[in-house]
Length: 370
Image (cartoon, rainbow, N blue to C red; front, side, top):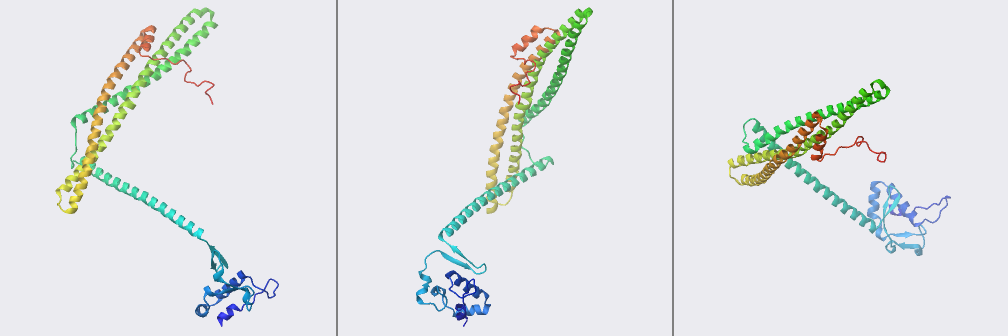
């Protein structure tokens, strides 16, 4: 009876009259009726009802002629999933499934790539943490006198001399800059004083000669002071390059050497500790790994020690050459300036290939201004 009731629904058109149901409306009405049945009746319909694969679509409603019956097996086209909850059909094509497969495969590839990057980062953090732990343990043991330390006495002495030399040269650089600032202020004062004397010589006829002599003297001192400033600026620039670039580069290599020395001692202590333990299978595997790490850090330590030795030798040679030239320049320039020997002062600058920048050279021209 339920099956019969499901097929005897009378179609009603928009005006309330009976009429023919389209194919889509008949399917939707059957689905609505089946959705409204309770669970028990639905199970009975599923048991006693016809097979969906053998049903037909009636174009003229119930009781129509056989000519209007279209078997579903003869319909060709895209498959349709019927969603009774939202009262609509969803077509499913082969292209959509292939797109879904490609999307799933691409998402799986991206997920595997991100997973590989995460694993690499995790391994790196694990190795970094283990290395940091070993080095920290070694450093604490050295400070408390409970750990052994690899020492190269000759190299350590050279490093200490370099650090002391750098501190003294930094002091020389600071004092030379202070002298430059004071000398620059004095030159500016002499220049202003010379201009004032010149102006007064024009406005005071009775003291024109006296003001004129003093104006010429201040202008000459100002010119010699600018020449001396050029020599001292060259001296300061050379000392700054030696201290803050050459020496600093050598000290950076020394810091890398000291870090490699600490790592080498840490892995050496780890290997010694494992060598004292039992000789079982697990411990022997750990000893082999520790031996490999020990050899790697030993090679790194010896390579950096050789680099430090070479740089220290080159630094000593370069320092002697640079300071010999700069100290000779500083002495000749200061002596000629305070002796009032303008010719010797200019000759000193030519000897060391120092070119003075004209006044206002630091200011950009009107073409370079934004």
